[in-house]
Image (cartoon, rainbow over all chains, first blue to last red; front, side, top):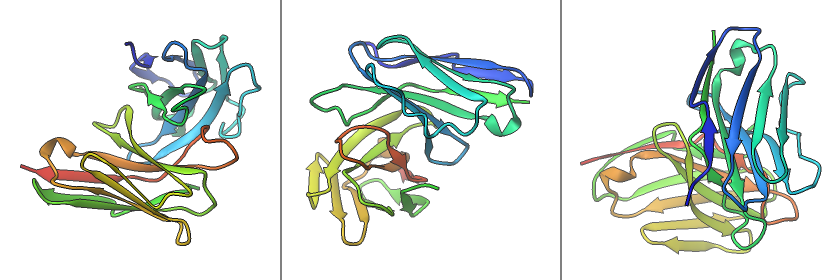
Length: 115
Length: 113
């Protein structure tokens, strides 16, 4: 079956512009996560959606970052007034709500470069 | 700051040798997972060990967990060139068995044919 997909795969933007990153989770997965990975680093948690519960936004680094999710499907991560330190790969993951709920399935990521 | 810290940062071995990677963490965990990442993109789940377990096996993978030392190790036996990748440990804290993960910095493994 289809895995997690993300678009665009690469995005180059000028400092100060807004960007939107999209994630399509695996169908039926109720949980969706956004992580950020800077070059040569591990993943940093950003935000987590679980069903109809209020999202866990504890990892968002500033109020320039926001994310939405439509029901249990598509999610968009928006970064306003981008800064050079926002350059990173943004990874989305989804997981089930039962059974092997702990196993997160990752998309290929969006590589964001802010010039 | 990262919950998990891994060592070594990089490991280079010959095909057929065993590779051992270590992970330490700071707070109590629900479970610890290992993921593999190829070419700096999407991660693939390898194995999970729960806080009340000490050792798990899956194929050529062996994971150990020492909660008293807050550390885990991943052993890959009889390594292959295809095992070349970055390996990350990730910890889950809190009362549920799923949720946001805290990742370590990763170990870059290179297996030479």
